[in-house]
Image 1: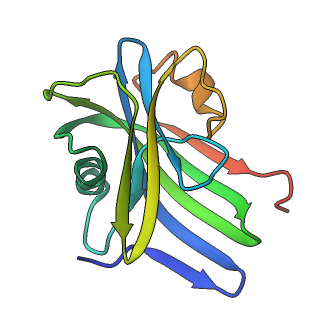
Image 2: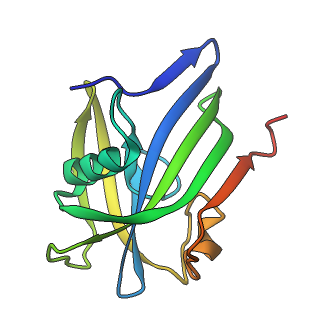
Length: 161
């Protein structure tokens, strides 16, 4: 196992992440991690010496057992937020995905051992017209009208100066 690309310094953390957008029948695969009060896209940290396409393929295989194909990069985000009293700076790459595997539109849960930390993942297929308790907020509108160009978003929580 390689090392995730993340840096912790005092009360702050930098994360380098990938997320995947997998759609079927107007539904988006989302995940709730541990006891978070929101859903987000499946994905995870990029590892040392791994490119972002390799990372999203690996993460989806680990978490969903699906063999996915990367269609293309849609969004790059710089996300600044707080989590558990930690200032977080996240660089994210969001990919549009597809698969030749059979997909059943059915919610499922898994327990993952992520670097010796037990993580509970609750996967849910959400209608793209009703993405509730979902982050990041910009995707609620973007996902309904995906464009050909790559978009860049800088997202700062209100409490980040």
